[in-house]
Image 1: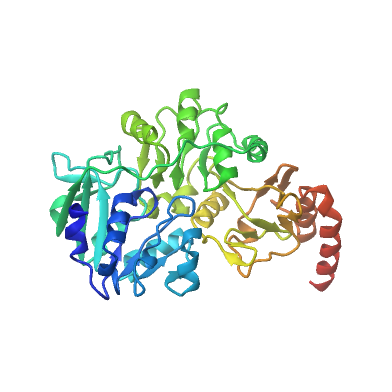
Image 2: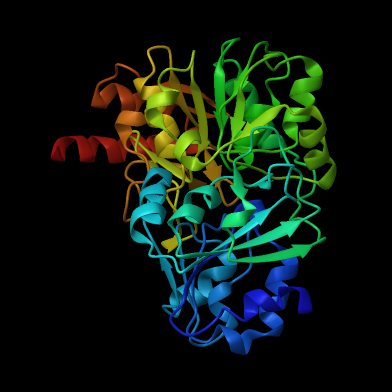
Length: 414
């Protein structure tokens, strides 16, 4: 596409270029890169791509193209197995440090709203990492999109700092309205009972955390403190669940176009970079901070796997450890893991004696409560044996005897 020619012209072998991820990713730009894939020879792309949101594979643009990222969306698996995608095993705090100190970015691409009267362009619905990379890059290219809303409090860039400016009017990355499966809804209701009125709440990526956020419509004076927000907060706002003058904060938004319009019109949420949204120290000072995250499996020690499925890497560490650490440091905080107790038509227990994954995503010391459709395991102040007993009690009954036998054998080896 001719509109992106200035960007295509900067591509050359060896260049390291930061591309916006999450909902800052621009579908028409991805299409333009595909149409000019020969220009991507030897280009090293860097981006924080989110499973379930981002599906474009920059490393597949050319045999010599490479991508550095931090989570692993499923569509990137072929390039990952071919050694063309490098996954940095970092949580969000580590990503912040890497991008600002070690990434060595030649060009930072920013996707932003049109400038205001002072010449500043809002990052709009995706402020997670772009504002951190922009000042650290050697050169900067601003894609100014009239479709990008200038959201309240969102970080902004000085357009005069851009070496290249591209002006467009192109659709943003959108998702259908958020819905919850029946199983997730049942778990979400149990989680909602653990959240006090007046809490600051974080809900992570995944069906159960999202459903848990949606289940809080009957609460009052909640403040959003999350990495992402979706259109469920419209219902919370309309139900009066959110603090009227709360400093609701997130790194990016994802949902249908009408949700982005709502954010612009309501000025409800302040967007901020990951250095702020994922700062455990500030989260520790929030009243009743409650972190709600999902997991693929939890073992009888309380350790969590967020990254591996059937021996394959399917995601990354993400931002959950920072939120859960903030909850652990908070005097009234609580960190919650919600998951279905089984998978694959109840043939596989997701409460396991030991993690099947080669790494631990969240350590046992950061987990307060684990919730399945069978109940709540409160691990706070519990010994090893008490933890195991509580976790076995929320497994599906058909798997409990096997878990108990495994624990007896494991316990003797400790």
